[in-house]
Image (cartoon, rainbow, N blue to C red; front, side, top):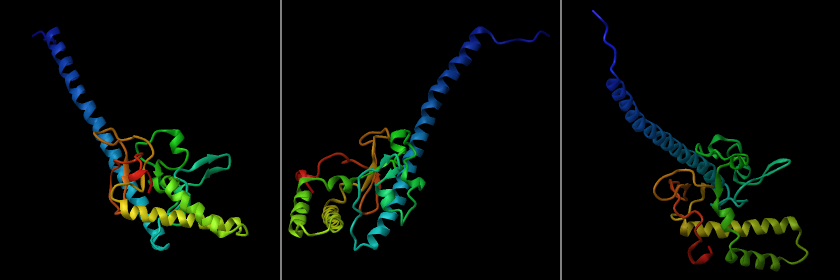
Length: 210
């Protein structure tokens, strides 16, 4: 009995079915991968928040005051929150990097996240108070003491601001849009420890200043 092969019509039908299935499966796989990276990012932010909380416990409830992003120098990475909190979490801990961060200029700094208080401290309302304080210290005050006074004043101002506005503004957030979805494409961690979509990253504080 002769063996029957596939007809051209049957082959075309099979190819069409494979094409339809591929069109369904490939986007689904991509969506699952994006969701996995998003979940991983939120988990990382919660771990980083633990280090922030440990710092606050040992410093009278004040939040850290440092540069909002590290910089890469010839001598290595300088400044930034991972270095500042190295006594509570290794600066090269995986939680400092978002799983969706593929930008070498970002990952080379050691962190995917921007520290918002380190940026908001430069608003005019804060710096006017800081300058007033430093001028009152007098010209004989050593530079090291002036630097400590400046950081302490900025930390107090930012802590007070976040105690008022902490439900709205994240402490840490993705430094770039990395999570495609409706609304903000960045995640953030807030004063209450909740990790979620960072709606207001980049927006000015109410009234323009903290």
